[in-house]
Image (tube, rainbow, N blue to C red; front, top):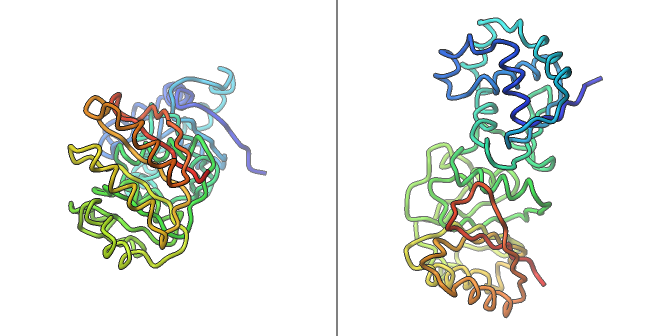
Length: 294
């Protein structure tokens, strides 16, 4: 029977220290992971199901951490080398990238990964940037259903789109800038190299959106906060798209006095309730609003 271990990232660091995994530092340093992630790999190799909360801290009793450290201490250099050379290293990089934000990652002993206990992903297909961590923190903190279509406004370089592509059938990635190669290769990501404002024009919306339900992710910032949000509102208003919910960034707030309140009112007129979302992974001057149908 698979044993389930729930721990904070600080537990992984403690296990790695007690297991003396720092002897692999030259190897794992090249792989852009840490001894803590190598401890995670060791637990998966032992057949554990591991739930990692990537904020620092400890939840396991010291004796239990010591027992687990003894189990992974005999990892061989050959195992580490094979691990670093395999695609599984992307699973460990995901854990390392999320460190410091309240993201919940569930690893099965077969290396399957679920975010927040709901969304199964292949980390090798994710573009692991700071924007991705914001979205993973958001979905770790609440249960949202992704409809068939996701519209990602301000998509480049592709962190949000790379996640949406694994939980929805179709992603419209809207950004004049280029997507990262890993994201461009995803079959269900359709890159529209236009601005969010150009995408919001009626003819473009009609051509790009086949109908059905959708959700909108917006990480747009062009230097004109009100203009950016006006484009989002036009997308929300489109009857062909039928937006179920949206996650919208307003940034930076010091350049957008009164814009958040204005956007709330405008979204309310369209039938959306707007809730401010606090994200630890966001910058101090970023505001995120979660919009749901009232």
